[in-house]
Amino acid sequence: MKMTTLCYPERDGKYLMLHRVKKKNDVNHDKRIGVGGHFEDGESPEDCMLREVLEETGLTVTQFQYRGIVTFVSDRDPCEYMHLFTCSDWTGDLRECDEGNLEWIDKKQLLDLPLWEGDRIFLRLLDENVPFFSLKLIYQGDRLTRAVLNGAEIH
Image (cartoon, rainbow, N blue to C red; front, side, top):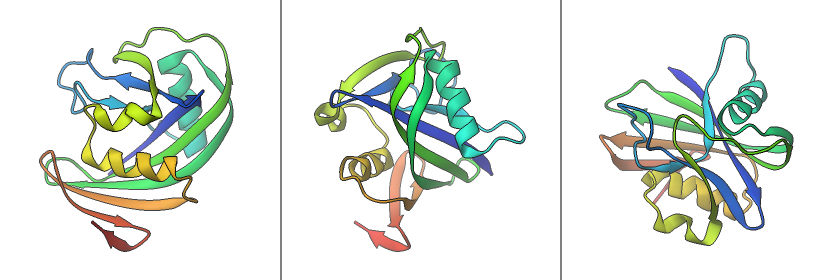
């Protein structure tokens, strides 16, 4: 089982996205995702998100919202529990990331980008400002086969 965080810094109708093009053997290669990563021992979801955003972007988050938990089930990888955040305020200057290229992407253009199919679901939930949610995404290979939102199947 893996525990991770993902954060979407937002400003002027845009999210800061990471275009994953720099890491070898990256399951997210060439996809656009938020910033985040794996928990370190003793970290809370908030601790992990704050550290990962700082490490990947150079930004120190000062205002954030914990938006939901996404459970990834895959026939290839261990189960992953991803804690999802957005943030609206920070200090510091954006710096280069060794995992990919950081880009401000207009929220209206997100769905035109190469994204995981399940990411499209939780990005829509973020856009609709859905209260804290639990989303379970089941994949066979790269194909989303089932999605369950707050215990109810979605299509």
